[in-house]
Image (cartoon, rainbow, N blue to C red; front, side, top):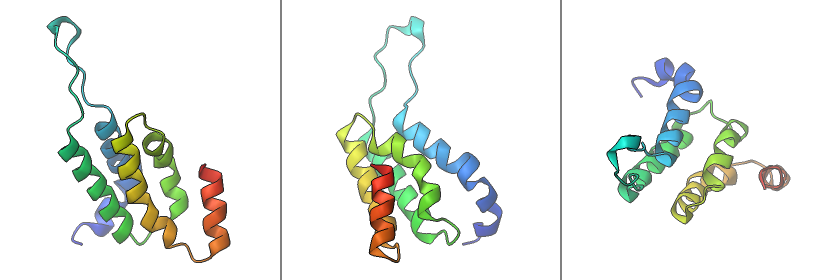
Amino acid sequence: RDLRHEIHPYLHTKILPRIVNDLLNPPLPPPDSNRQPVPLDVAIVEAGFRTLAYIFRYDPNLDVESMRTYYGMTLGNRRELVRRLAAETFAPEVRKMKSQSARERHVRRVL
């Protein structure tokens, strides 16, 4: 609540894209290190999606249309865990849409 107005200009340009990109693309080891890539940590991914859900729930200026940029990266991910958590994160916001026809139209556009 304390940073609501100060953080809002940066929410869609810096904060949310950074959360989504860092969740889905863990850092690769240096090419000369002969180490395996770092796997996704389930606890970190779940915490990231909880953060997204919190932001989506309590940001009064956020509409479902502006969330559409994150659908492709998350709902289309190759990992089943990420797809499931993304669906759980976005579903309450889609359910909040006022009319059934708007909800159906939005789901058709996304899928």
